[in-house]
Length: 302
Image 1: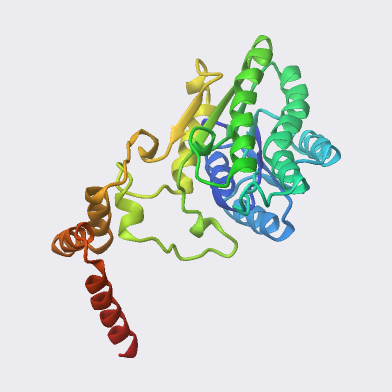
Image 2 (image 1 turned 180 degrees about the vertical axis):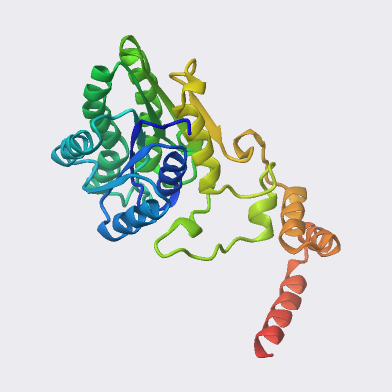
């Protein structure tokens, strides 16, 4: 019960990682405020928390709207009397269009939700924390703040900004005993924390390419957030914690051996992977393609 007597606001807590964080903090004694733009998922999460015996409140709103943010903090104080922990989790992705096709409106929407939202919540929540003599902010960033895939400029920029905002806030708020940290998850499968829950659809390759041996779960992130938000982490502030199963530390250079290893993990057949590797290294690929097409057509007809 590390959070008994405390109150936490978790943004984007209707589903996914935010929902898992809300449940973890609630099970450890915290009163929990769910802030989400989706009314259905927010109401569903509220009911789920209350069924677990957690004192909870749902406030519907948009993190990029200052009036909504101010209202959430106001309702939190009116209901529970305090704000001890703020988890800035709400975020949106991006369509993945090339920069030549990206619009300024799309850019601003991602920046507004992923970066402006945490700034606004920090602004209003810390006013209350200062009066209480301290508090904790945990920003959910992403490994995309540190490395990129193609065509992710708005999302990556927003998460990079949130990482920088973390250490800026940590320094500015240190005189008020307010700690600020960030957590950067890698690949986390949120299927089971959707509304309604979905069955995970992951391959052997998805799991085994991670040095830790599997794709992450929302519970993994929630456990780290709970520690960082607790008094046990009272000497930790201004830093970022990567939680990605070891992926960002693994160096990958594409060559025939990496491709063969991936095929072996995907199929579980080392002999097949080696045959494909050897075939790919030969100049006459046309015969190999013809054989594969014949096999595929045969299996489709069955």
